Length: 428
Ligand SMILES: CC(C)(COP(=O)(O)OP(=O)(O)OC[C@H]1O[C@@H](n2cnc3c(N)ncnc32)[C@H](O)[C@@H]1OP(=O)(O)O)[C@@H](O)C(=O)NCCC(=O)NCCS
Image (cartoon, rainbow, N blue to C red):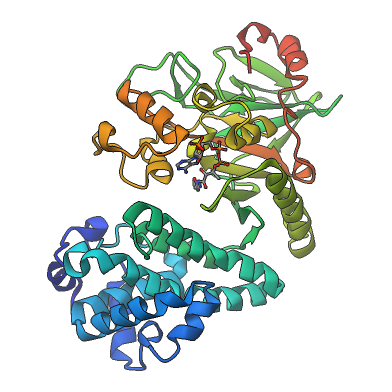
């Protein structure tokens, strides 16, 4: 079956926003006629156990496997997604996968959960090739249970959302492991700031990369609004000149000059970092954060000693500095904010999917769930016309070994004084 015919039969002709790439290659798996592992019902129990999912999922998954096997369009789509995520992950995630709600109704999530059962076996093979212990793989596999927990919370039944299934490709293209509360992915830094260390005392300052439109609050400006200023970052033989970012995540409208004799660059776009991911499931208490970052620090030093890892970095909804106006200072995300150096990223209202488990911009704000204090505070924010940005942080590699609050905020005043922007410091 060709892709348009399959998408038409599934009632979602515009899935993937166009023709799904690599369709022909994937369909060769079908014509090879070797049997499709995700449709094998005899091994279902074993695969369920390997995915650390409860035995009561067996019945519903068995049924959905049979539904897929009987329907050529579902078989072709499952084969395509299986190919993209597990066989050829190097092509990137298959974003835009169909919801399948028209053909499978409330069982759509089970289609994706069934495909997820391939994850443990593939991950074990990849991790083994990297020499990782089996316990680390077993911990990383927990992500499937976290995805399922999201679906249980958001849709009221077992399953996995299509974008979360598509994300699994990332576990096969570069080292990606879970240590306790957090996951870590080794990759190149996508940029946003350059980071410098003052040689005299190790104090750290970030400068915004050039060409960013900034609003009056020091956040990145919304598209189609006029910025308060545009950043630049210039380097000469002797110095780097740019706009500083405060550790609480706002860009200051004042050019500063960092002489190369006094400041050393320790992070720039393209350098190796650990990208942090926060699986759903329970609170992120301080001790769990401290333990996890210390374990990851030790793990990557042991297994990837040849990689010059510069920092731990994240981009997520809860690194928006305005979260401090919505949650008490004792809340876990705010403690993590204070333990790291924040910087602004572009407006990203849909990042709040992780809070509401549904699209944000198309939603009627009043109808978003308000079960937790965070959801209620964010609903008020959105009802006032607020646009959520999210944000980024970095934590230099050596600081992962011992997470501590206010590492970058304490003593920042002395840098600001020396560089002449102390009057821009905010209360944080
Ligand atoms: C990040 C995370 C662990 C923080 O949770 P936490 O440690 O419980 O945070 P807090 O202690 O500040 O929680 C304060 C309140 O917000 C609620 N809350 C926190 N995260 C929430 C979320 N994602 N959805 C809904 N409510 C949430 C808590 O239940 C609590 O509510 P209460 O006061 O009514 O009891 C949690 O949001 C989470 O698991 N998120 C899903 C994964 C995720 O967002 N990953 C990032 C993807 S880029």
